[in-house]
Image (cartoon, rainbow, N blue to C red; front, side, top):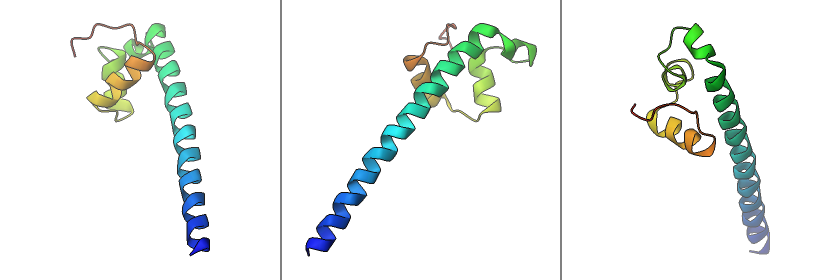
Amino acid sequence: MLLMAQEDAELADRLRELRHYIDGLELEFSDLAAEFAASRQWENQGSESAIDWLRGEQAVGEPGVRERDRLAPLQLPHDV
């Protein structure tokens, strides 16, 4: 029984570590997306906006784009 509790605690710790790592990656993605939006590189690639580029090129859906925009604003009109 004690072994199972230890394994459960290790699993819980690993989940916390993984979530922290994922959050860091999401923040980095948001920062880079904001930088990409400001560069207007998305326009050079034929997109109407950085949000459109993210949707098409990175397969990021609307909720994902909005969450990333909340973390690091893409400096775009929010009428999409």
